Amino acid sequence: MKSYMYAVLICLCSIARLNSQHAGVKSEKWGVAQGKEVLLYTLTNENGMVVKITDFGGTITAIRVADKEGFFEDVVLGFDNLEQYKAEHPCFGATIGRVANRIRNARFEIDGTPYQLAQNSNGHCLHGGNEFDRVVWQSKIVANELGPSVQLHHLSKEGTMGFPGNLDSYVTYTLTDDDSIHVHYEATTDKATHVNMTQHSYFNLNGGKDKIYDHIIKIDADNYTEIDEEIIPTGNLATVKGTDWDLTSPTPIGKNIHKLNFNGYHYNYVFNKPNGELKEVIQVVEPKSGRTLSVFTTQPGVQFYSGNTIGDTFTGKNDIRYSDHMAFCLETQHFPDTPNHPNFPSTLLLPGEKYDETTIFRFGVEE
Image (cartoon, rainbow, N blue to C red; front, side, top):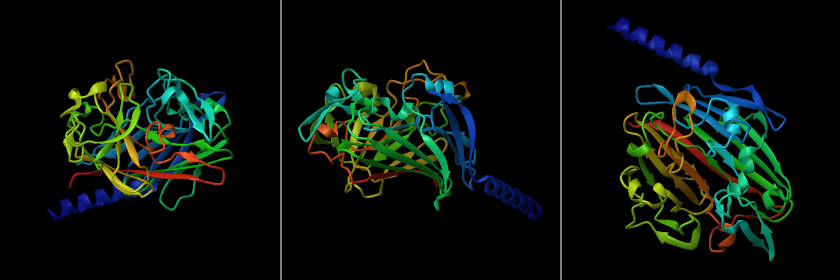
């Protein structure tokens, strides 16, 4: 028995050394888009967790984490080649900006000056006109005391998608040894403009074997931004109490999903915390695998989207045919249509100021 236990210990130590040797970040050429070379980065921590990021769209293409048995699986939707990312898709894994979510009628004013934005969603502006998620970012590996890091940079020029100001944007993705992905957003401008960036990964903690109905989620938010039939805020902050989208206690996603408008969850939740404070605000558990996901953020809200319109036209990694409710998004951000609602936490960025937000996705297993 002692010799068996000794052999197991040696094996575990060997695995730990192997993971430690491979921990870090590396890059490889992944193709060409818009006449520019596209790179794919692989970040690995000492536990063997792997995150893959491409500078096309600032996109997370894979997150491989262990389940309760130590078995690694990819827990985000996406593709295994650049060509599919270059085609139309619902922002799988992308970095979103300048302004995430919807802006009504694709219009806002700053100091009385009106700005007409790209109308890419039924006459409204969605996800900044899909600028950030469709460009090739400048990218490089950077030294970071937290762990392996990739820094992305994009200069969004004055007038792009109708937005004012030259916006200098940076996003740094870091993988730490506690199985966390740190996403740090930074931006400066030379003219008053609006900024609201987010990360658009589609999570399925069972590795895509089943839909997300068994995932149990809790969001620390007593209120949400009331919306109209076009999923745009009315300006009112309403309570979730007594609604089918109340997630203040752990709730299986499938419990009420078929009762909701929009074929599922599509609500912006208002966190019970001060804006700018980094705090844990979301917990998700997938019972079969035992995988967990905790989200910490400085942002004031999250668009919880349950993959209501993924459709059945996409075949992703491992030849899995995707469908509605195959995955969910946790788009930590300021509130939708904020430029048109002065009662919402402001997204206005002025020259001399710095946009600075952080979101952490921490993976684990149930104890």
